[in-house]
Image (cartoon, rainbow, N blue to C red):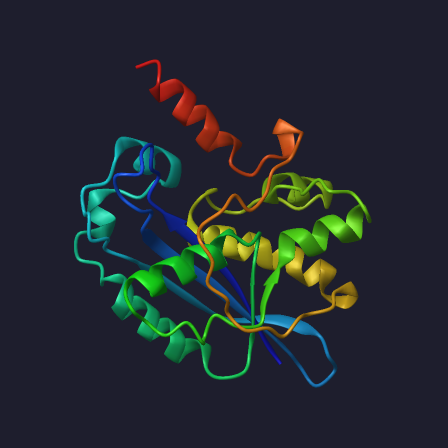
Length: 217
C-alpha cells in the first residue's frame, strides 16, 4: 500500500478581495516492504504560479516564497495533472490537518477540475493528537509534536517539501497504531479547520504574529 504525505503553501490574505491560491506542493511517498516496514520511497515537489501573480509581503514573509520562485512555475491545473500521474491509482492521501484538503477542493472547484483524486484523505494531526491525548479536543502543531517526540525539524518551516518530510517522520511513528479511512471527496465552503486554546500549539501562530505586526506598520 502507498501512503502520500502532502503539504501545501498558499497565499496569505488580509481581505476577501482574492481567494487563496496554492503556491507550492510538496509530498512524500511511503510504502511498505514485504515485512510490513514503512519506508520513504519517493517525493513530489513543485511551485505553482497563481493567477494573481504579485505576491504580498505577508505571503513571502510567512512562506519564504518569492516572485522568483513562481515566475516560471506551471499553473495550478498543470501541477495537479502532474501530481495525479505521480500519485497513481491506489493510495492514502495524508496531511497535517484538514486544511490542505479544503484548499485543494476549493481550487479544483473554481477551475472546474475533477476532484475524484482527492480521496482516502486522512488527517494526521487529528490522528496524532487523539493517540497522544484521547478525548482531548486540542490539536498539536507540527513543530510541537516533533519536539514532543524528540525529533528535530529538518529544513525550513512553511516550506511545503520540508513540512511534508517532517510530517512523514511523525507518520512513521503513528503508523503502527493508526486506522486509515477510505473516503471520497466532498466539496463544502471554506471553513476554519482547527482551533486550539494554547498559543504554543497553534499551528499558524507565526502567521497570526505577522498579521498583528503588519497592522501596526
